[in-house]
Length: 383
Length: 107
Image (cartoon, rainbow over all chains, first blue to last red; front, top):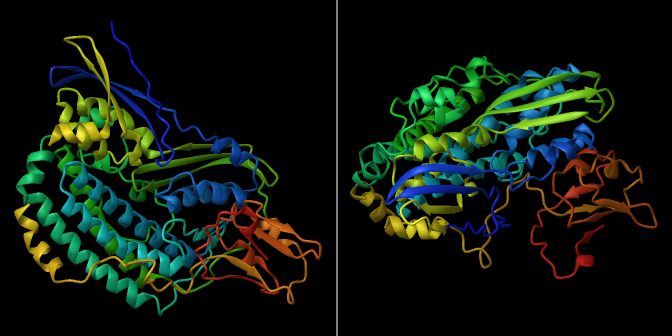
């Protein structure tokens, strides 16, 4: 007889509590069950009760790591319904904001991945260099994370010529460091032992589960909204879509680190190619009837906002599809067949707004007993 | 591990990457948005700031001048942006923790 004791998945300090029910036979994982929905905050409903210009600030706060992506997707949907044309200079500034955010988010992930395999030194180094990107955000838009740089019809602050030297300087340091880290990650024995051939997601399965973003690019699927459905100024910016073939955890880390280098190139190009001109066009507060989607490549994959308007200053319906939600089902094929000690790094490898993964239930098939394990227990197991 | 030993030795000779916060403070950038304050002399009581505030953190006192409740404020700077006479400014004051809710109010 087995009992499952649901020790509350609420964790006020973390963003996204989730429950993974993992069935084991000895050390081997035979089945994985996911439970989602512990953090239903009612944001979609709240967005329909706010004016567009107020809802923008709420949309930014859906995620604590990618506010620029969420605001951009929301703004794109509103601009598509309202027929608002964003000025050229603002489109380039949006690209710079999105890429700076990608840099800090990918380095955050890389640090967490290093931490999960017990390599705390590398974690510290990654997070130290992440500060270079955050400093730039703070200098350009006033805040480290919730910079609220975009607004409906343009951007709020300009990038002035006296900002450019510091941006280029920090990016040069960052590029040097990230190249060094790529070298370290691809050759270090500790990392290879823990990450290579662990949690493999094959190309076929990744396609079937509709995974998005770096998760799917790590499995060799060449898919990037920035190239395939360009928004902001991505049409005019040349860049490579990074893919890796192996589909294991190492490939997912490498995809993200190489994307950081690509983002640095994009920012340099955008700073250089940025046309002068107005920053924003006026937005009257209300849009006409219609529906639209805003679709962008956020740090973790495709982010989609659907917006239905019946006229007036409030939307009738807003639907958000976040990349972590699309990716979470890939956890099952990645985990089944592996061992319990792989669980933290495999769960971390999809970068699931990480706090998803803090509690695991282990069902032992041999004895039929159920244990609830916290992440700290798992860390002890893997040492 | 052996691959980053070079970094370890380099970091031994380097000063820390962090700032020891309460004793020393990092310099805040020019566009930093802290506690909003209102110049009461210049304010024309147009009520635009309350209209654009996403959190409805702005209410009015008896002289119809804005009052910012910092417990709700998200420091987006919309009020300072919209103000027609530029009487609202975002200061660089960010150490706003308090035990008393009434103190979390800015005029």
